[in-house]
Length: 120
Image (cartoon, rainbow, N blue to C red):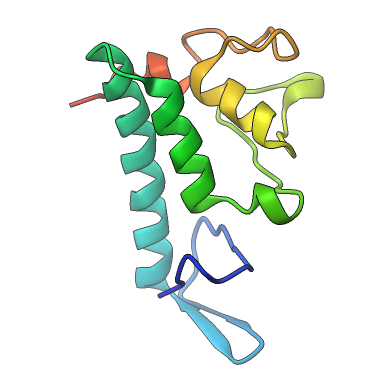
């Protein structure tokens, strides 16, 4: 399993084994990463729906799971389009999760994590 201290991140949609150097990514690792992503989106949405600090939760999600502090990330939020499809900056990713950034005006509540209807 990849540890937080690892600086190389890999996002895969489906794979049984993928070799990177001497490391192997297994199907279980991929499923765990996808589950972590889902859990994080729900956590942001839940914080919002319960009147908590969704922005703080989203900042922590970005810190714990993406390497924005050490380089660019190719993050493609669901339902984004046009010039704002990819979010190579932490600010762009945060706008997807919580909105409120005038540089990303197309992030409406239906597209953001705080508008996620499957919070539970």
